[in-house]
Image (cartoon, rainbow, N blue to C red; front, side, top):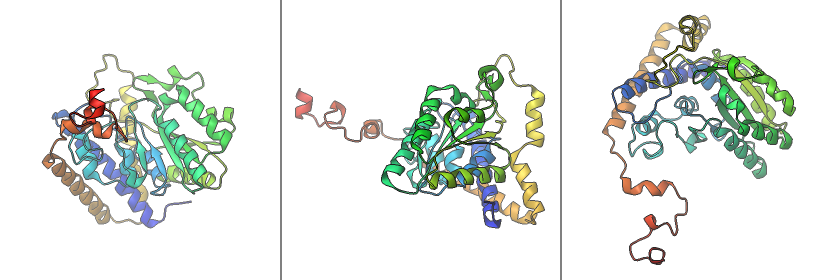
Length: 339
């Protein structure tokens, strides 16, 4: 399945939304306006958007600690995301989750996790739920190359293959788990070959080519909807920035020439912009998309900055779905308090 003309423009818009959002997020983090840590996915936009555009809104998805881009790639609004990053009450998780814990049920984002590989079993469970409920939904788990060495990856993919669950395991292989290269941490450096042990198909795709990622993910989604089970996709991509903004690394682990090469010749936005130009999309149309995205990001920042912080007294409201008996949630003098 290939992009049509409308989808091509939408893919560029979504990639640009991620890039502009994270560039501004980086600036705000350095200015002390975003608490916690900030992990940018700049350079990985094509892998994210190509995969997300192969999904329906009601398909379920889990992310990683580097997941500002994943909700955006699936079509989420920017205001609630920016407010969440800035810890504001109007955030998508009421300002209580922050950068590494975004969730948006309106576009099927079940959740994201600071735990490496933490979203893989959740997506597997979502796929099991879809099968039990007899829906045509699929689930997709994003994870990095470092997560492949976690037990949760192997346990999940084994169960999904055994029960033919409608799930896509999507590895954003950017070559490094923080500062450790794939070659130094994987006895078998091919992520895709891991699928052989569990009897499911795997695809290796250029993660800087949004159209190629979209086509590969569409095939996996179609297989899952038919009831044929899971697929492993390894997208070869690259993060342009450090593992997280402000991380100090005393000994460089990536050659400066390698980073420069990707930024100059493998930038997914620049690559796809050339594709659009070759397909006859005019420069003024691309500028209009870019201006609209810049305005949208600026509005999201204004919205977040004008929003109040959450009341600390409400913190337990999001920890328990049924907080009966929790002292902090019971009125003074209640039976639970007196016990």
